[in-house]
Amino acid sequence: MRKILIGIALGVLILFGVFFFMGPLGNRSFFNGGDSPMRQQAPPGEVSTPEEGPVQEGNEEALPIPPLMEDTDPDPDKTEWDIVADEGTKEFISGAETDTMGYNGDYLGPTIRVERGQEVTANVKNQLDGEVTTMHWHGLKVDGEDDGGPHGGIQPGETWSPQFTIDQPATTLWYHPHPEERTGYQVYKGLAGLFIIEDEFSQSLDLPKAYGENDIPLVLQDKNFKADGTFEYVLSMPDVMFGVQGETTLVNGTIDPYLTVEKGLMRFRVLNGSNASVFDLQLSNGEAFHQIASDGGFLEEPVEMDQLILGPSERAEILIDFSEMEDGETVTLETSNATFMEFRVDGSKENDFEVPETLVEIEETPVAEVEQTREFVLQGMGPNVNINGKQFDMDRIDEVVELGATEIWEVSNESGMGMMGGTIHPFHIHGTQFQILDRDGNAPPANEQGWKDSFIVQPGETVRVIAQFNHSGLFMYHCHILEHEDAGMMGQFEVVE
Ligand SMILES: [Cu+2]
Image (cartoon, rainbow, N blue to C red; front, side, top):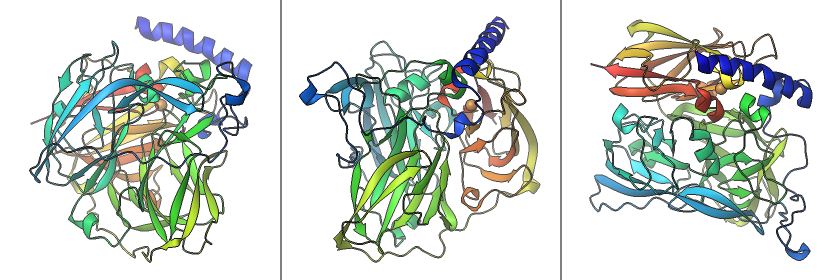
């Protein structure tokens, strides 16, 4: 109660502060940065001589591809990974070294690639300086004890070794820390990686599937670089309200990189790995592309679009067709107010992949089997963000779900309504992949008609999802604006027999 009262007082102060400094807000959540000139050039810093100033021209660096996670188990039915969370440094802007965190490296982590049916042993070592961390496999269907939520704290110097079996369709998930009140900080510093599941279907598909060649991981993030070319995790007043949104975009940890692409169809696995920003992705030439997979697997058929909206933690696999472009021609992946990267067509490398007519059959989770409907109301602002009037408490289980149950979860966003036009909240449920039934009573868009584990809830909107809970244990549901999650916009449910 005291925490909430202090929160309310703080919230009022922040509201006034924000209004004073920023003027009308409302839609800041839809932007991934201000309108300041980005990335062309870092502001002059004092860190080096004029000849070697921290200057970053666009499209200087080739897109780095995260290496694949090493599998130390020779048994093809099993896989074992050694993952070390550690401190590091990285020069995002030449001449300016930034303190970072990474898995098995300075920033981000290797891409995990695993096959359905494989038995996993993951050895996660915490080598961070005095920071407790956890390892959450976002979107993975495993028991609560393997899920790596806030209860799964790994103390500095310790190793956590969960074992589980991969039992879900091919898809692109990700992994990141989930410690209480520190998730935003640790992810911002660089702790995150992709987690790809393959299965018989994905391996048989006539689509680009050479990792790093025509099947490209794209981890999208945004950061606020300081005048000296480094970044830090410091929460300004708008950050507390809307989460940390940066003015500089990174793809796989690099500012404005380029990628040489085949003259043909290329596949991209896109993760919105930002702390808080929603990205409305499009191509600078306005051409359409196809989404083939959502958070939890392939869609029933490719969805043609010229803009892809991805909220924090959402993933999409997309196919971009470069076959009509000339050798050397370029096109940019951008949002309505920022650029992410450039594609450069190499006419000497052609492929004749085609967008498939259909992909998989997705069985509809039967509404007739629903035993319970639960309501989750997202409320409050800034430090007061909460769900159903409650802020996260490690010692309180908010919902108890029966193992195997099918339920409808109805999530509505009343947060900040009336005062400022509201804020969006991306909602994530652990331990399951679900289907979106409707948004304000209307069918979801075609690219949301597959398996999902996170979804945007617009101000004033109500989204209903149908989920089956086939893993037992303690799980989280929360807003994936990490600053909201850390502030307490999170609850716990226990799945029991
Ligand atoms: Cu939120």
